[in-house]
Length: 406
Image (cartoon, rainbow, N blue to C red; front, side, top):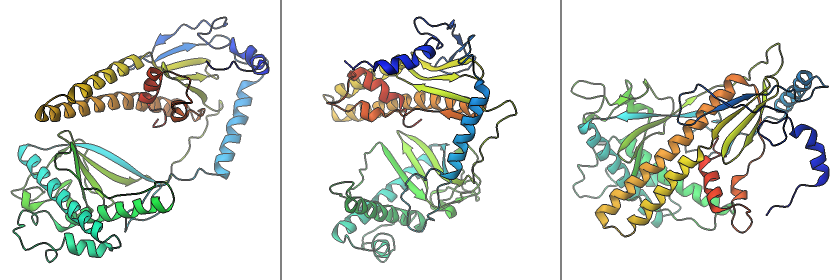
C-alpha cells in the first residue's frame, strides 16, 4: 500500500481539486459526452462550467508560461536521439523520417520476393560465418568473400547471381555494421558480450535491403525475376505511390506473409505553430491505465478522455495470446508453426489498435493545441519487480498502452 501524500501538499491542492470533473465533492457537473470520431475506442469530452482560477487572469498567465517555454526550447534545443549510422551514410540525419507502405504482390511476384529474401539471407549468413572466423575483417574483405563471383565457391550457384549485386552487397553491409555496433556496445559497457548469429530460414519475419538504383519508375527492379518497369516485366502494387527513393538502405520486409516497403525522406526543419491573437492553445495530459490520457484545457474550459475503459479489450486479446502460446508448447511441429503465425497476427492486431489510438490523439493535439504539458510517466520503473506496488494485471495493461512509444 502506498504511503499517503504529506499534509502540506494536500492543503495546497485542496482548492483546485474541487474544480476537476468526476471527483467526489467536485463543483463540476462532469457530464461526459461521446465525441463523433469513427474509431474502435470511444473518446469523451466534458465542459467545465466553473473557472479554474476565478480571481486571476488565466489567459495572461498561460501566455507568459507559453512564452517562457518557447524561450527555453529556443535557447537549449533538445538533443537528437542517438542513432547508429551505416557506412557511407551521412551523420546529420536527425531530420530523416521513415515511411512504411504495404506491398500487394501477386503469386508470381511473391515467389520472386521470397527468392530474393532467401538469397539475401544466404549472403548474410555467409558473411556472418566469415566474420566469425575473421572478426577484424574490413567491409571490402567481406564483400570479396561473400558477394563477388571470384569469392564464391566453385559449386553451381546460378540461383544466387540472378539477384543484383547491389542487393547482395547490402547483406554484407548489414552483417558488418551489426558486428561493429555490437563490439562498440561492449566497449562502452552497455552489454557484457556480443555474438553475431545466423538467420533462420523458417523465421516468420524476413527482409532485404535495396539501393536507390533498385527502385525505378515507382517499383522494385529485379529483371531476372521479372520485376521492373520494362517490357515483359511486372510492377508490384503499393499502398502509396513511391516514384523514387532519396536514400540507400530502404527495406522490403515480410511479416507473416505480408510485404512492406520502408524508406526514408528528408523532412526539413519543423516550424512551430504561431499562437493566435486570443492567446496560447495549451493543455495538460494525465496518462493512466484505465484511461490512456485525460486532457485538461483550461482556456476552453473542457476536459477530454481518450481510451476510457478500453484497456479491457486489449487485456482480453492479451489473455487469448497467452492461451495460444500455452497450447502451442504441446502441439506438433507443423501445428506449432501455424500457431506461432497466429500468435504474431494477434500481436500485430494489438499493436494496430494501440497505434490507432496514438495517432488519433496526436492528430487531435496537433490540430487544437500548440503547447502540451506532459508529465513524466516511467512505466518500466513502475513495473519493476521487487519495487512495484501494483499488480501484474495493472502492469500488463499499462505496458500494452505503450506510453513511452506515444
